[in-house]
Length: 87
Image 1 (cartoon, rainbow, N blue to C red):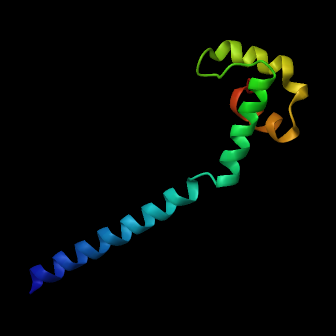
Image 2: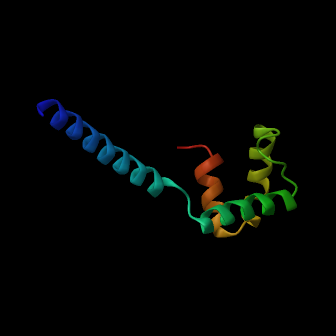
């Protein structure tokens, strides 16, 4: 009986920890609107002549700096957080 109680306690605690971990991960996932906004920023940069950062990161950063003032404020904020030099 004592062993059964230990096993049940262990099972319940592991289940609770898994639920807590899953809730934490779900809160970190981006919202649908955030994903759409990020995609639209990269699309806007592509229309302005900047290639994707995956192709050539340094070229992308340089191009982004050149067209930065043409971006909408939300894209400026996001691109600053991602690609501008931290001071």
